Amino acid sequence: MRVLVLVVLLLVGAPMARAAEVVGVTSAEGWLIYGAKTSFAREAGPPGGGAVVVEATETADPWSSGAAAVFNGAVKAGETYTAVFWLQAPTSAKISALLLTNAPPYPTFARTELVGAGDWKRITITGVAKADAAPVQDALTLHLGRAGEPVRLGPAIILRGAPSEAELVAIEKAYKPAGRAEDVAFTASDGAVLAGTLRTPSGKGGFPAVLMLGGSGVQVRGGFTRLQERLLAAGIATLEYDKRGCGQSGGERIETIPRLAADAEAAVAFLRARPDIDPSRIVVLGSSQGGMVAPAVALQDKRLRGVVMQVAPAVVGAQVVGDQVARQLVMQWPRGGSYADQRRFVDGLLAIVKSTSDPAVRRARISQAVGDAVKAERIPPDAAESIVAGLTDVAASSVLDYRPAEVLRRLKGPALLIYGTKDVMVSAVQNAPVARAALRGNPQARVVVLEGLNHFLQRPRTDDLEEWRTLGGGMSDPEAMNLIVGWIEATVGARPPV
Image (cartoon, rainbow, N blue to C red; front, side, top):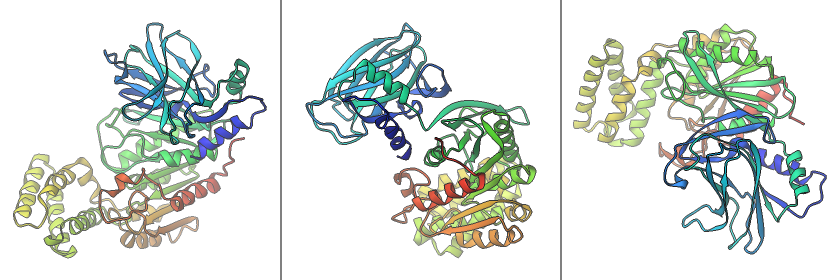
């Protein structure tokens, strides 16, 4: 984790003499929260100026909700360890703080019971480890099931040894997070209030920023974690928000590209109004469906510095959907026929979608056709429900007639398009040539095909369509990450924070 390493070095390299050694640093937004709702805020109390707000439901079990900050270094039996963290809790709150091995049976080597003080407080807990433990195996854990009211947490620092008061003061002064997170809201052109999280680097403002747009269907924040970490370390702010009608965002869930582009335009306007964001250095990055929204925003907003389109369709929507479903059926159910056979079947379903605007009629006809295909062993029984759901979702009919290449032909200025050769959702073979042809008149556009990457810019090891869930989150491939971050840095003229 580059962010963690930078913070640790800042602390270890600070001009202070102490015996305590840093073995873990968790920023305010880096706590692992369970059993509770969370949000991010900027606070004057904790070092670094950021806080995570934890809203736990009070229960009889103190461990029903909580927060954990891991030891990033190995733990040695018989040695003393101290956790230092910053907490603001109401005076009625009862919180247990423990140092323990974060796996059953959760052996504990230090415990203290806390009562909220109302104001921000620096808390320390010290204990002697009972057993050796590998990195990230041990943790500082807070039990919040009896908090009753929202609790705010600042950063947590794990030390080997027992620091003096002077050392603790020096640690607090030296702490500098890579960035701060803040939950925000902005209003779309139809009045819908959209909820997002803005992350800004440490240091003086005037930051470049990247607006991040996810794919089709229900999408909430959390899809760009690794990329956000890299961008913050490079001095670039990020904004990600729940799509309308999803998560904490209001409004009706509408999946048309013009509506989603209007929402993204409202997000860009919000960024430009922030005093800590440079309004002339904003990039819009979209993945999959978001990659179709991004250039649509750029056509309306000539002030954007650039757009990044990850695995975004360039061919007409019906062709993309037909190819997606047919490819997956061939991979999952070879006995159902060739790609051409399955493509004819799927094109028939798409014709039904386009033939009627009545949702009930559409669902009935598609369900009948899919049921007949199951009986004929054209498709596997366990695929029927997902096919019906996908083709009757509001996203389906809105995208079938959309022609992304027409938007790309009109796009001017810096643009980066990325495809993966292992992507069965948006075929690089079909889409990359169309994108290149559409962008032929834009000398600042670049289309890159990365060998061996899937729809999530991961490097899969098998042809299992569900393997992406086990590969550690989206954009885990270093080549893809370096390409995207490097292009954005060059485009916005980013300078890493000092």
